[in-house]
Amino acid sequence: MIRMENICKEYPARRGEAGLRILSHVNLWVKQGEYVAIVGPSGSGKSTLMHLIGCLDTPTSGRYLLDGVDVAGLNAAGLCRVRQEKIGFVFQGYQLLKKRTALENVAFPLMLRGMPVRKREAAAMEALSRVGLSQRAQHLPAQLSGGQQQRVSIARALCYSPALLLCDEPTGALDQSSRDEILSLLGELHGNGHTIVVITHDPCVAAHALRRYRVDGGRLEEE
Image (cartoon, rainbow, N blue to C red; front, side):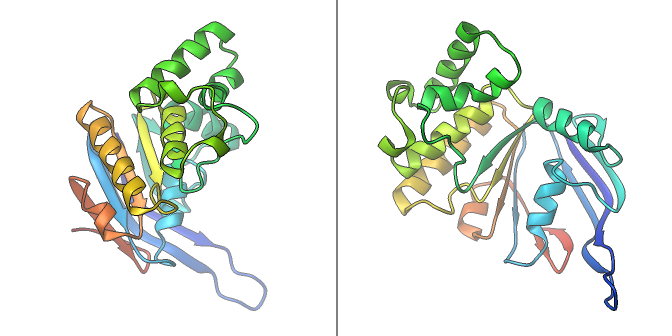
């Protein structure tokens, strides 16, 4: 599913300053159906790595194949297409539209793809059912708990059956009870065959994955 070989990420030098290397010769392999965590402290390079995995940025050098697509050299339009077709994102801050219901939030990416109303609403309701929130379909985000909002975010990521579920600090804004709820849900999704990569600073969150990598000082090592 993910194959990164000798990935480096550098930012060019500014006037009077040296260039900055964020990632150095990173190698990462994730098979289809795996549950992998990438853990590291703030400033370690894990956010940059997440951006590369999620095709939000491109490496300075190295090779990256995502679900068989060589994405390292794609332009902005190509990266956008890969993100839409291959990746479901789950962010710490939920990124829900405040004035739209849970159902409308989940259906929103399908609307952008031009899917007819009835078809996208049916797909969104199915996704909400998978995360246990079909009964909250008509609620606004403000009417939902933090854990429920994150479940809506996960349902939105799942609604178009992405090859990869990429979670950036998915429990960072949650209390203990809601955090356990989301980690349990990710475990269920993995059990159903989803490929999941979680980026986190929290070793307790990373412990739920079957394989773990640590990034520090721009280098990646499997634990």
